[in-house]
Length: 394
Length: 92
Image (cartoon, chains in turn yellow, cyan):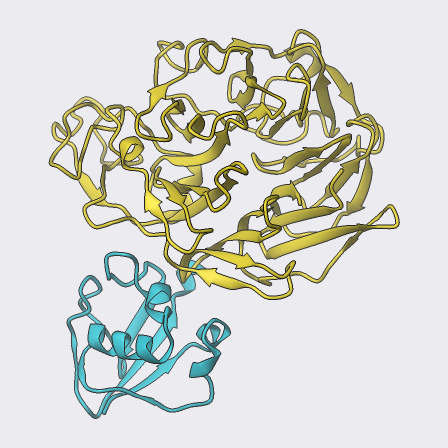
C-alpha cells in the first residue's frame, strides 16, 4: 500500500504522507494555481502536476526531489500544421436545419493537459499526456520534450490527415463540456491505459468520441466501442460519440477494463473488444465519473455513484461507494464513515484511486475520504480543501 | 529604448525579472517579448501560445493603448514608450 496521496485541486496540489498510520497533509504546492492532475511516477519517484493556469497557459511541472522544488515544463505544444475541425456550441443564431456545409478548421493549441500516464518499466523515460483539444502527446526523455501522436490526431474518425490537407472523412469526435471553460467545445483525452504486458498496447478514452486501441505503439488506432450505449441518442449503438468518463484496467488482468459514463457502468473482459453494461440503477450504480479496478482481480471495481445527469451530486444527500467483485453482476454499497445527510459531493473522473486495500476519493466540495479495508469503511481526511480534481496514490 | 512593466504575478515564474528596470530595443511587440525571453528563458510560453499569438487572457498595452495585433504582435513600439504586460480579469 502506498504511503503517499497526491491531490490536484482548484488551488494547487496537496500531498499527504502516511506517517505512523496517520495521513498528514503537507503545505500546498503551486498555491493558487488550478492543478487538474497530480501523480507520482512509480519508476523513479518523480512527481508530476498539470497546471491549468487561467492566464499563462497549461503547463506541466515536475519535482525530482519528492516535492521540495518544482520545474515547469513548457515543451508540450502542438506542432505547426496541427489543425482540427471546429465544433461549435449552438448559439441563438444557429439554424439546425442549415448546418454549415463545409467544415471549419482551427490551429490547435494546448488548452488543458488532462492526464499524465507513465510507461512501463521497459520504457523508463516514456510518458503520455492527454489534452484538450484531443491530442495524445508522448515523451521518450522523461518529459523534457513531447511529440504529438499523429496517427491518432489524424484518425479517420476525426476527419483524416489535416496536416496534408482538408478533411477526407467526417469528423465523429464531439466536444466535452470540460472544454467550455476555454471558450471552445472540443474533445479531450482523459484516460490512457498502457498494457503492463506489452508497451505497444495502449488504450485512450476520448470525451466525446469513445475508446480507441493501438496494438502497435500508437502507429494505428481502432475504435473499441462495441456494446457501449448512448441512451440519449436516436442510435444508442453508434460507433462514435460516446462519453467515457474514465477508463481503466486491472493491472494484473489487463484484458479486464472498466468505464463509467452518462448511461451506465461498462465492463469488458476481452480487452475492450466488447463492452457490457453492468449498472445496477436500483442501488444507484449507474452514473458517475471515476472508476478503479483492483490491482490483481479484474472482476473487482469501485465507483462513487451520483445522480444522473442534470443534477450531478450525491444521491438523496448521502454519499456512498459501490464495489463489485463479480464483474458487475452485483454491487454492494458502503456508507460507513461517509456523510448521509446534506451531502452534495461529486467525485470527478480522476478523483478516486486504489492502492492495495486502500482507496481514496475527493470531491468538488473539498472533502477527502480514505478507506483501508477495500472501501467498506471510510474516514474523512478533511472537509475544507479546494474543489478536488484528481486523487492519486504515490 | 522602450521600458517594460509587467504584472508581478509573472515574477513568480521568473524571479530574475523582479526589482529591475527592463529596457529592450525598440521594434515590434513580438521582438520585445523575444528580448525579454532572452533575459528570462521560457517567458514567451507564458504570454504567447504555440502559434506565437497572445494568450486569450493576457493583455499588452503600449503606454495606455492596447496592442491591435494579438496574432503576430506586429505593433511597433517606439523608443520612448512603455510596454505593459498584464493578465485579464477574464482569466481569473
